[in-house]
Length: 583
Image 1 (cartoon, rainbow, N blue to C red):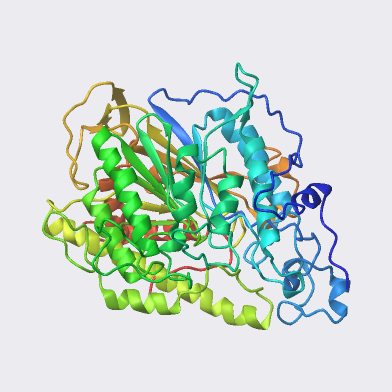
Image 2 (image 1 turned 180 degrees about the horizontal axis):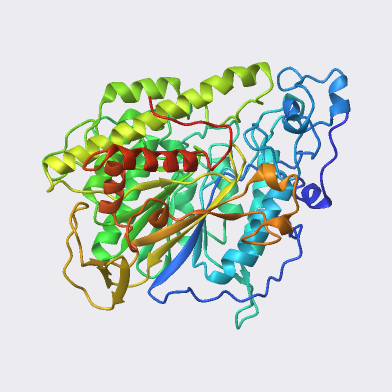
């Protein structure tokens, strides 16, 4: 039986890339865009912006009109043959057919039309507002959800090459004085589906790792040349895309407990002169090359990765070492950005091992975390079709796990709020942000963050904001009424979350988009407005306070329920029919 036809010659070119040393082909975007358009200055002089994009899961075999039970690969008539389907064939109809821009909540990956429209929106709408750099946290390759078109190493390489071309052309700037085209800085990261088999990345200390070698070539223009030898060893690198801000791309695959090719970190820590375990090498690099440098040079650090650093995803010892490192360098690490989980949320580094008064942010229950860890779904696999036998099982399992995880988050926020209420001297860490994905596990999402470009004083007066260029007095507790606070270069100002209502735009023309006519995406929310932060407050104490308000600590139950309802809807990127609620 023949393969389904590809959507375009663009994909055929991309699939020719099968060698780790090959040069990525020059692939034009599917839309006509003006690559010479200048990058506009940010709307506010004191702030800059950057884009976070994650989990594209681009699938060149996706076919509009295909059945969802075939992972959106095969037209209905093809299922009449002997080809096995992704679960029993569901009743045909609107819900059982793959739409033009994807099938939200189905388990299918991203069609080229979705990725193209995503990049067109970024290029035409977001880029002119000013984007200083791009954080790209992995998982560009498709899932291995169709046995008839099994993933191969060549498949993964070619799709990642296509993703690079999309990003390069989206952010291409006019040629410099030497006639060379430039791009906005792009900081990539390895996802668990960007390797073969998924999750399993071997640690080959002292020897060349073929996977890391491939990405060192594909990402050659993104990784500083002098850091290539280190990247070949451990998969990490750091850049300074804007003055005073170090962005560290962390290879979370050596910390993730889903990776069967490596083990846990050394229980004694990673402080030895020559760490030998994969996770210890990553953490040793992070401390020596990023955090100590930031402290010495008076800079701040953003950490980016694919798998979020929580105790549900990391090896136990690796997580404890990571959490303690975040506490030790809490003044330097002012932002963390991850993907992988496809849901929109935040949390804080926490430890099950106390690290001393005025140091620990929180100490959580190891027992509750173990239950979540034992029951979590495999995020490297898509959700099963809602109409299949497997889908009926997952329709109960996945929402149940999300509800369990939601309850875990609420417990986490409440515990942290109680600790700070009892002892205001406890150190507060910046929140860790997990962004929703482009792939429509729920609805596709994109996010832009704003950050301070210099040291300023932000003054709050009745919800209004005044910015000056000199430091001032500041009160830092989340419960205190503040008139002003000093902020450093690199501290986050806020973010805007965008999403695409796939089910709507599959049936309506994009010109009907009221906010951005002709485009797939629209604004979902801004946390300051959505969660009533007040003024432009976005500091770490405000996020601790938000968690407190959601869980009724220091506030009323009616307010808590209202905020939790908003948070739960954003958790699943406003996908209808998915109910998230507390126990």
